[in-house]
Image (cartoon, rainbow over all chains, first blue to last red; front, side, top):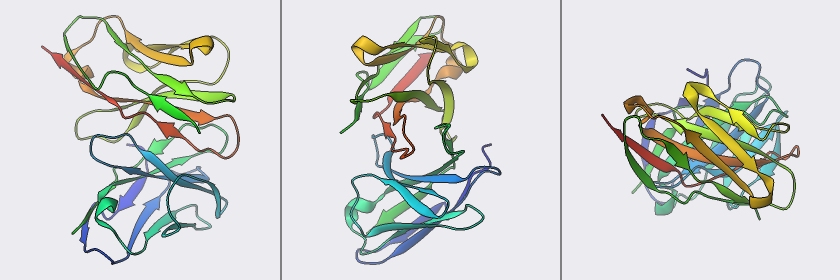
Length: 112
Length: 114
């Protein structure tokens, strides 16, 4: 086990709704990264948070936003859900500078 | 923009066969290179990593990878696979900067027949 926990594990939303996914990072890690993994593809980098600030962003629209809290836990928010947002959302924590990622089990989002 | 290409989508081997999974990346600067593995029903976990130094790196469970800078490659190898190596393997690139924007390949599914 990595010590990275994500919630919820599964959820179903309808198009246009909003969703919040949560991640608790591994003890001692100060950086959290979020990924979207569609079926048959590798994880796609959404963004990374370090010391409560966004520190790098992939090619995702602004309706994907996030937060990092003082205890280094994090949230991913997605507004105005689209069908193509259906995917596994992975959170990974790390110690800044090492690049080694520790992944959670993921939150599987289905948008109907 | 950086990209990672894994040429083999699905590889099927018999136990004791040798394995080589290809990974090529595209990026203009210095990168850190990783192989991650996802066993059935488990989360992604680190198999091995390269930051600098000896381009031949060894990881867990007998895996190794060689960084060839001139070819922008970081191929994964194992001399003799076991049934328990059945998993999905992902190559990843992270620029050697503080931005930490990582790029993963689409993965290779390895099936090892007993």
